[in-house]
Image (cartoon, rainbow, N blue to C red; front, side):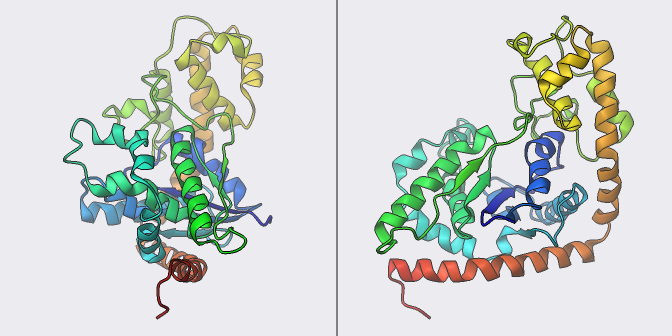
Length: 337
């Protein structure tokens, strides 16, 4: 293990899909062997939009089951749900008083999620990047695995850490480490199977746009065979993928599942049509995902075990976070006790 502490979170909204798995979870599984890792199911973030309370609780357990089935080991990392640790909400308020409105106004994800109804959006949706900063800084995490779409939020966390350190850090000015991004792997941003320019998403109305982690082998094969492509064969070099987003997406997915790179995939399949490449991709995906799906179904049915794992994880997380929160309270001038 290194001295680096990694924090990352994922929302309990809908089933995990291949984009989550290749874009985040595969790296999480690797990192738990080399880093001090804290992984959080961010149920506080989940209520920034309209939600069903009973469904949220169910999805929190199901996500825990899916993460464990995908390779996270609660004995090698800390896995918990966010609302079980008081630090997140309390530190978020302190950090809201450090952050600036102008910083939040620049957050592009709020503009995307609010749609045309800014007046109807929740305050939580506007300020959740500050909660995200509290998630990271409250464990003094040094590194955060992020996709391209979250880099802006990590920059905000870095700005908040720097401002807090300047205002309240004392002589050395280093109350919070300034977290660094970790962007890894050939498929950090997996795109829709129906539109190579749009990210694979749980919210896409078309089930054919994504590979769910619960899909069986036949469903996986059918979805890849029907994935949108262009009429040209696969190129023999990476340069040939320029301007071909659907082709690039499928090659990226194959490379990530096979543990190789795009150049190697194109050496094997370059010049071939999608009629042969898609079935090969479907077979590879089914082979890699089937064991996870089977274990997920077993875990999902064991509510007692899932609750115990999350409870134990929250206790471990709180043991780290509570002293840091108390230090932050003293730093800003709150009376102890």
